Image 1 (cartoon, one colour):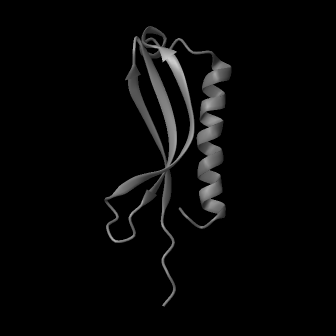
Image 2: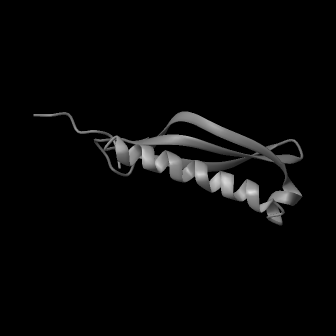
Length: 84
C-alpha cells in the first residue's frame, strides 16, 4: 500500500505587533488521518504594516499583486508536487 501524500495549503494570518499588524504567509499541511486538521508547516514570508493602512487597505497595487503572486506560486508548487 503506498503512503498517501499530504494535502498542502497556504495559511494567511494576521497578528498584532505593537501598533502594527504582521501579515504572515505560511505553508500548511493537512493531517492525512483527519482531513479537518491543518498544521502550519513552513514559514514563507511576512510583512509588517501600520494597522491603519491594513484596515483601510491602503496598500499599493504592486504590493497587492506581489502578495497574490506569492500565494498562486505556492499553490502551483503544491499542484506540481501532487499535494493538492
